[in-house]
Amino acid sequence: MIATVDRRPLVNLTLVRWHLIASSIFLAISLLGGLAYAFQFNNMYPFAGIEWLSPGRVRMVHTNMAAYGFIANAFIAGMLFAIPRLTKRPILSDQLGMLIFVAWQLCMVLTIGGQLLGYGQAIEWGETPIFVDPLIVVGLVLLVVNIAAPIVTTAENGLYVTLWYFLAAFAWTGLVYFMGNYLPQFWVPGTAGAAITGLYIHDLVGLFVTPIGWGLMYFFVPLLLRKPIWSHALSLIGFWGLAFFYPMQGVHHFLFSPIPMYAQYGAVVATIAIEIVVLTVLVNFFGTLHGRSEAVRGNLAIRWFYTGMIMYGITCFQCAFQVTLTFQKVIHFSDWVVGHAHMVMFGVFGFWIFGFFVELWPRAVGRAWVHPRLLTMHYWFTVIGLILMIIDLTAAGLVQGYSWGALSHWSKSVMDSMPFWWVRSVAGLMIIAGQVFFFYALWATARRPAEGTVPAPIPAEAA
Ligand code: HEM
Image (cartoon, rainbow, N blue to C red):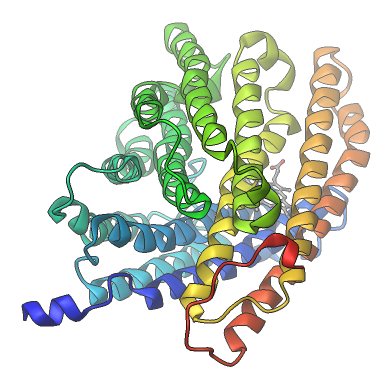
């Protein structure tokens, strides 16, 4: 029995591959939903008059598939690769891993179907229908049992910071999901429920996506740069700072609301305090890059990672200002916030995920990338498209905010926003064009004849 266990490969690349495939499929669905919804702002909604494809429902599919379909699947793939390598132990059960994979994708399909049929839950970011929520909670618990087992049983001395982040995410995610989807719905209505929803929205980004994202960065960056992280102490300061300050920020989504002002001020202070954490993490990663900066040109995964980190720095810097009541008076409810959301969800975590793909896909399919030039084009189309979208929406937000502040007629702000909404659609098309190169490269690589060896990652300039 023990011999059988020992003969299992350390990393289950089949599971990694399936989660990456699912991630890319849900990315495609999310992007098409986002583009369709963007066209609604141009009076060109492609599904006008079709109830189950009405814009509000398609918007839910867009955001939920970005978070739970694209990001969550890719993060699971990353952890399935990183955890066994760091603990020198395989996950608890490959069969359970496959069951979780199937169950997770079933949850996604039920979410899309439920939302399109009008069963979306009326909770921001918690729109997964209430009949899917229990399945997701059970799925998360099983996932944690399966991939935390090697961390708990490892014989390694001391846990690397990546595993600290993962363990924290494991502890928080189930709680956060339960809190956000159940408390406001069934037990805590009204203003108190809104405060919980704010906590949920922010913690989903801060206590699920962020710790897993940074955990994977701490794993991949030193590995690809072939040097240790610059400062282990700084990495721990970053970790504890995140754990301490992040949970208090949620109410900043509802500034100027009837939620008590002490809670709002507390959220503002905690949000500004998180800048310390951000700074430690960024200093640490750019310190690690020092002396190896040619890797940003020479290794496409590293390029994605550091582009995402720059986006992270800008997002968080923006956060420290936009969370103040002075800024909020202008930007609240405007497209500025949508620009910010795309910068963090796509520009940071999405870009890191593309880096994981560059590194993991050849290993998962056992073939070297074909057409590396397509991957370089994917990078440039995506980055330029997203930067265009962010600048555009940020400017649109200012135009809208000042227009509302001047008490102009609402319709004037809508008319003034029209050109910006056109630019957003063009930027979206550009991003989608980039993904066409990417999907084709994934498909063509998986189909090329096997070489029998796990290929080295491609250098960016091979293209
Ligand atoms: C083709 C590219 C994309 C287009 C055209 C697009 C378009 C849109 C549109 C029109 C909205 C609704 C804005 C509103 O309600 O006023 C939206 C919301 C959102 N999108 Fe996208 N999107 C794209 C890609 C992505 C990606 C890749 C992600 C994440 C990985 C993402 C994350 C989000 C989030 C988090 C929101 C909610 C924003 C908020 O409520 O403030 N989007 N998107």
